[in-house]
Image (cartoon, rainbow, N blue to C red; front, side):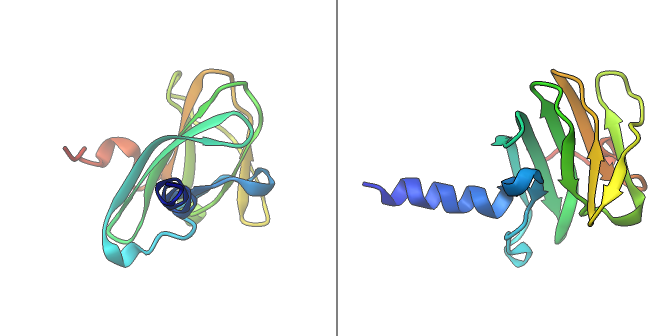
Length: 127
């Protein structure tokens, strides 16, 4: 039965897209149905992406770079976007282009992309 496989693909595309080399979180998710989260979905460019949406908007994203490629991410956090290397704790500088941010990564490092007013650590983890 191919129905389950197609449904899985549709849900994945609602949560994460990476066509054209740009990582997009929750690009087609209907926020009115409630909160959502996903863990370690594979994105083009050798990245694993985890993210959560709460109260109708993306809360944060965590991106694991598998090969150290540059990362291009559609900015869903606005002017207060912040990028941190979770291995070192350092803030990472980035370029902005066409509503996206671009930053360098190191292989096997994880990066938090977040609103600087609402860092990842401020979110209570749900069970």
